[in-house]
Image (cartoon, rainbow, N blue to C red; front, side):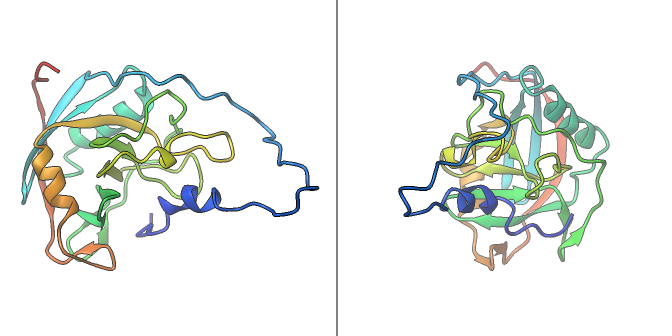
Length: 206
């Protein structure tokens, strides 16, 4: 998977189209799928993610997003994320990591997974979602942390399927904030923010 700079923008840019010709019929979704009503995230597995800027506790939902949650667990169990970096930081938008090591060396992952964006989970502040290309079922290891509430990244319809939320930062919110305000050049942190380890932890009372 390449550096994927445009990958989160694909959804928002697609929403900017339209025609000023009022006689033109509105586009019809060829395969409409109604959005699921908003639900609460489930904290089924928790992980301590240690970074060079501090520690965060992540709660992962394997109840509502079993494919995505188990995919993240697989990478953690294999220690895949150890030594990877937050390679893409857009202030007041997202902090993306889990696919590159220092020097932007790509780390190959497993096969892509099925997109689980239509589960009623929203891209709220501090939630974690899977990064992907403009192909819906293309997510592998890369994830992002929402720096604000980004409902534009939610499922809209089958032609704007959004991004799959599967967890949230529940402790170390200040660390998530520090990651997102780090100095960058072309959205790449000037100083590497390294994920030193990810290990299973007890889930605190939420």
